[in-house]
Image (cartoon, rainbow, N blue to C red):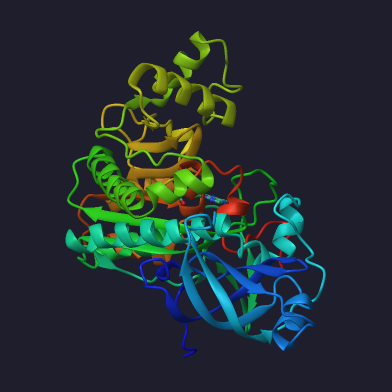
Length: 436
Ligand code: AMO
């Protein structure tokens, strides 16, 4: 490993010799003194070099630096309150260009998102963008830790399947030797299989694929889905209670590890939600937005994005909360595997979780009784033969169970006040984007 001190670790050191390495962010090449801002993955520091009479090797190297080049520097650390960047500077004694950059940077901080994505590796050198993925790491880690502490088993389900995992819509097909495979739209079948296997409580954080041709700020063709599934529940209420608890653990960890930096770099306060989150039946939510002047286009349809924004405004005003569970979706707009109400088969034991005006999750109790499940498959016009591998899980006894799926990039987008999941996905995939 290169012998270097991380820039973030310089400040507590006494004045004296140090070695640092990073890329050149700015150069001010003045007659009497040269300044360079050097950045590594931890932060930035000012390098300074008084210019000798007649240039020497080091001053010539600094003059010739292309922005973005990676350099290694040995020099003397000096604390000086007048230095705006952290009150320290490094007086350069030697400077090696480890890897020179091309002279022109193809993007700037204000380039279009499409251009930024074309050069994503440069875009992510911007500490504002890198911070998003530090937050993601902390958030994911906190969810995983919460689940492990509560006795969950982590599973990795296959992404190549012989049947659709959700519906025939939005399905990627790939040639698979003599047959055709489908890319998993969710781990739905296999997280339920874990309940038939007696695992009790499982989670998975993994990619899901949807051949969704939309260009909205919240749709991708490949996204990270955060999934959990638990047995021995009485209703979707048990799933919601787990869902909100694990989210609180995630938000607390982010606030503690990055709250100050998120505020400084992104101008956003990380707010840990209180529990329980408000719950509103979908039918009532539609009435509420109608009373407030917006009619969701079709009575038998899901909330549309405008309806989601409006109900979130209501919940913020009424309950001071950023989250709301919309519950009890109509059977007609839910998949065959959702458990229907015992006393009203037109409604399901299900929910969507809306956060700051956008759906981030769907959850439900599942139908675990094979005879009822078969009826529901037929009722939806599906062919039981095509779902036979899935249905087989239910032929040997499965406890009542339920779970949820949540889009990771959507949570981060809303938590960090970003305008699109293109910014909160490491490498976004959409209908027009298959590179880099
Ligand atoms: P659903 O299809 O609602 O439910 O997906 C769950 C969550 O996944 C995210 N999501 C997406 N994110 C980005 N781009 C997309 N194209 C996309 N599609 C979905 C959303 C959404 O709320 N199996 C069920 C979940 C369950 O019941 O356990 C499912 O997949 O945040």
